[in-house]
Image (cartoon, helix red, strand yellow):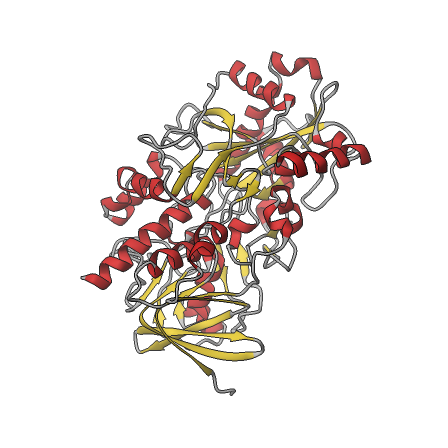
Length: 541
């Protein structure tokens, strides 16, 4: 066995340079008395397509910026395997995601507080944490902050088709909503985004670049993390490969896993921390039996309904002509606006799948474009997409290592649509979308259902159709979930410390006990902010 090279000692070693890792690196290194090392497997975020918003189309499923994972063949998706993008670049998923800023609902955080028994995770307690990092375009008020690094702006484009859909939703009884980040997001309106003057605002740009000159902070890219270095039941650092050699770094105070809902459980499992039977099957010596590591995977599955339209412009027409492409490029070059400044979704909505649901459990992403599947060209005919997802799925999946090699893609099995409730919600969601499109506001444009097809009418047909058209919106969470001491499946406590082990925390989206009712990047920023608070308080105690 090759001897690992000594990479030195730091007070804190942060394993993963994604959203959470960048926030932690900023906040912990603000104290000049400590030293901080941030390790990232990917490269620097210096590719132009990371920063042009529409560039997510070039970043996802591209090994330059993405791990290029795929799910297992899913029974709920009628035997399909789908791509599962995870950022492999400084800034992580904030460098390749849809840029939507959504905190979730009050009820999400009340549930976290109940599950953990810790009121510090309720809405009232986390709201100031959200506000602390926020730089909101509309200025500060009771719900928003404007002194932070995390820029939130309105989108810089307009589409008539989206205005018509908004009106149709209102005709269907859904009110207009100007701000989805006030705790109750019922309604229809335009998403706000993490952009600055039409350019993607990722975690690296917001949190890391301004502090790279701190002498107590070191950032290393191209560092593939293998496993933890343990001393009995205490973490002492990590082992990683860099430039073809194995290195070992020591963490004097704590090791912090920030590799995300896919990466963090993998590091734990390769370190002998996780379900005993899984580790035995993978030939990993058991150090600490922790059944919940890699379990409880929750994600948002979107059902992409496509409607052909007539007499109104969509991106399909513009993008399929040389003149249209040239004008889009010019508009972005001159004004940082237009289609190249687009997030994947411009218009959004939060609705109830049934009257029995107390708070909205469906999220719509409406786009003035259509394509068969991600990576395909846009359709030649004018059309829009109305994607709808179940915000609170009852299905639970797993993330497991395949072997001991950190370069091997893990088993990702979300188990989409594996419960009867999720299939029923899917059928209702498709019907609700049809009802909106059938309203008078849309009638002049003669919408025709292209996908999944109007001939599918019964619950059984619609549930199967959901399996045919369902794709992830890349929100894996909950695989190292917080919980009480008496919860056998909890991986970390409410202070994000790994149960039964010392000097080790997980600080990323994997610690959510339940997925938030909306896009997950903003909650990840909050988790890292709260994690930094807890870590600093522990050191000073």
